[in-house]
Every structure is written in structure tokens, then in C-alpha cells.
Length: 326
Image (cartoon, rainbow, N blue to C red; front, top):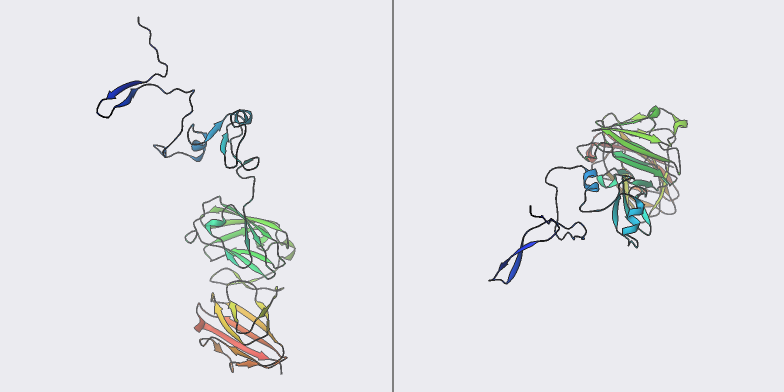
């Protein structure tokens, strides 16, 4: 019987018109390196693990030693999969595995979680009370199992609460405030509209709070944080009905125009207005309803208190009152 040679030798056919040889058949030589010059896809749906452990598209090694033998002088950006560790690695001034670093995102004001926050650590750096809102699945479709870490690095308190009543943020003793500066917590999505908040929470201050009946969020509480800011001449003073705390202190050094945003039923804001030397003009939204006379100015060296209550979701449903030092 004739001997069959099945080594990687190719057969060719010659095209005289184009003076080109075309390969007809043969077997791949497993000892030669191949370069993928076009995009490749799987014929059927596969798992992430299948992609990592496939023989194409990624450097695949049985062990770290096998990797180091082949990639002896790696450059930044090289990616490989180590089979015995079940680990995806990349080279960045040294071999690191995916997940051993922390992607940071800094926020200095009230923030609603978005898809870009998934898997990150949010650093809340503010000297006033701040809220991290957890959105509905319809608004922001985080996958079940998504984790977001939250670290308070500013002096202002940090609360993690649901954006609406259709979202549940569960935590031990229903505490949703971080313990204080440099405390850390994490929030995990366990169902479509259900999250669990855990970590260094303020368990020592388990106090009753008043919740917005429509939005299931804090609208008032004892022990407010106080926002102390200077509003320059001509700068608008924005009353934010959605975030921060109920008490706000403003030092006015010029004519000031008030405006509102994020109107929500049941939200109450009280503004302590401190004026220095000279009379300052005060301008308020025309749709706000004032109990008594709407102020047009504040005299020099005077203190006034503005109280505003939102009974709906527009400026026309705001009722305000004003008391000034005589």
C-alpha cells in the first residue's frame, strides 16, 4: 500500500492569464505563526469565558511560565489569558490582572448613577450634603450584579437613595448615609429595581427622617449640613429642590437673582441670606407665590430668611415666605 504524507504541503493551480498560483488544498502547519488580518466572529453565541480560552484573538497560555517564555519582553498594552489561573492579564509597566485596579470617578455635587459608573469607585468630594441617586432600570439599565463603590472624601455628608419609589435601596437598619469622611460603601444590583447598600454606614445615627411620598427620598432631617457660599454680584442663586440639604446659607455681596430647579412635591428649602454693607437688589421667579409682600431688596448689614416649598414639579407650584432682620 502506498504511503500517505500528511505534512503541511499545499497543492497549487496556475492561472496563466493572471500569472498567479492559487492554493487548492492542504493542512495548516501548527508550528508556524499566523497573523489575523481580518475580523473574526464566532458562528454561534458564546460566553465571555469561551472567548478568553479560544485559540484565536488573544494570547493564550497554560501557565505564567509559558507566557514568560514566549513573551519575554512585553510592551504596554499586551493582553493574554492564563489558563491555570483562569485570569485575563494585561501588561502596564508590569503584568496585572483585570480587576486589580480601581477606576475612579470624582463627583462634587448630587449625582444620579449612570452606566458609565458601573464597576467604578465614585469619590464624593464636597463640603455640603450630597445625594447619590439610584435610577430605575428603565432609566439606566444596569445589569443585575453590577457593583458601584462610593467613598466620601469631603466633609459634606453622603446619602445613597432611590431616585423614585419604584426602586428599592436596601441596607442594614435602613441606613443610607455614609459614616463620615473617608468612609466607603458599595451598592449592588440584585434584581431589576432592587439594590443592596452596605459598608461603612452611619449606624450610630439611626434617626427618623421625613420621606417624600412620591419620590421616596429625604426632604428634611435633623442635623442638617450647611452650605456656605459667596454669590458674586449679578450671579444667580439657584435653589435646588432635588439634592443637598434643607438648610442653605448664602452670603450676598452683590445684587442677586433667584431661580429654582428640580421642582419636586414636598421638597422644602430654607435659605439664610446674609448681606454685608449696602442695599442689594433681590429678584425672584415671577411664578413663585409669596405669602405677604415679595421682597425686592435687602438692606445693608441685615439677615433674612427665605423659605420655599414645592407643591409640584414646576415654579408655579412654589410657595415662598420672607422674614428680614429689622
